[in-house]
Amino acid sequence: MQFQVDSAAGNYISAIRNFELHKQLNDSLFNATQSKQIAELQIKYETDKKEQSIQLLEAQAKSQHAELQNVSLQRNITIGGVAMLLIIAILAYSGYRNKQRSNGELQVKQAEINEQNKSLQSLLQEKEWLLREVHHRVKNNLQIIISLLNAQSDFVDNPSAIHAIRESRERMQAIALIHQKLYQPDHGPRISMSSYIQDLVSYLESSFTSAKGIYFHLDIDETSLDVSQAVPLGLILNEAITNAVKYAFPGGRRGTIAITLRRQGARNVLLKIADNGVGLPPDFDLAANNSLGMQLIRLFAEQLEGELFFHGSDGVEISLLFKQEFSAVARQVVA
Image (cartoon, rainbow, N blue to C red; front, side, top):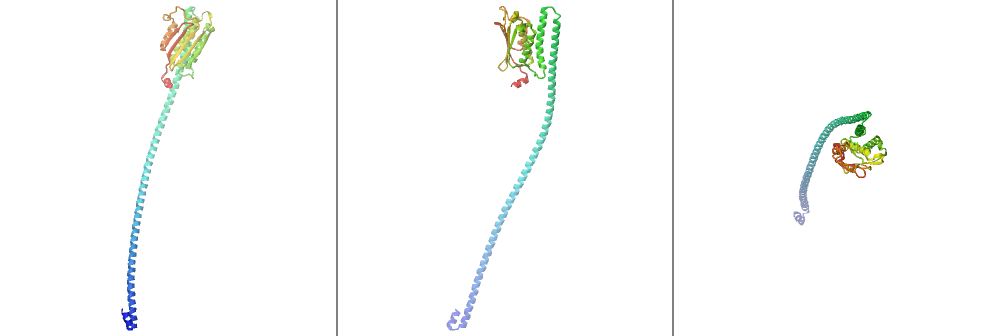
């Protein structure tokens, strides 16, 4: 305003000075304002920068906290894993030690079992050897008795006595054949009836001169019997075949004696001795017949707990149905 007054009054030098003063004051105000704004901006900038720094620090703190939590989690997981591995290792080692201990005990027990098996095998072999030796000695003793009977028959003139000696010899030979088979090394504790009957028939056929014209027909199933059944069955066969040879074909007649041994079901055995000879006399009474041969056949049939049948038409047929017995070992094998 002073500049305008001086300019209007024509006082230009004063007007210029006032104008310069005005510019200086204006510049000072502007600079002051500007400085204030700059200061405010600087303060705001510093404030913003501090806030950003604070936020950054907070973010870093959160990140570090998260990292610490992650590290702590990893550490806990690692510690847990290591602990779990240690537990597993301890359990595995304990199991391994237990297994080694069990294996050691099993090896000791297996060694004991092997020793026992060897001992039992040795005892079994010794028992088998003793049994074969017993059968061998029984067979030899029977052969001695048969030889004595043969020698005795040479000093006997009575036909009845000679006949009795011969029948006794044949019965003993029927038993001796069984013990002879049991003595064989490759033979088990049971008798193969197919082989035994063939040997018995061959012996009887060679013992009787009257048997030359007689044909023996054998139909034998593969059946094995215990000694307790084979002996009475062999004696029944001996008596029946001997009677058929002596009485069924008088006067040197020719004929056939059929011997059949068949299995009936799981345990039943059927024995048949049949001839096509003259048969039984019309007045023959089987129940009243008390000959030694018939008594022996009945006695041995009772010993076998079998059913005995006689048929006298068109020759004579003797049938015996009995149950096959098994030892404890044989029953286990059959089962």
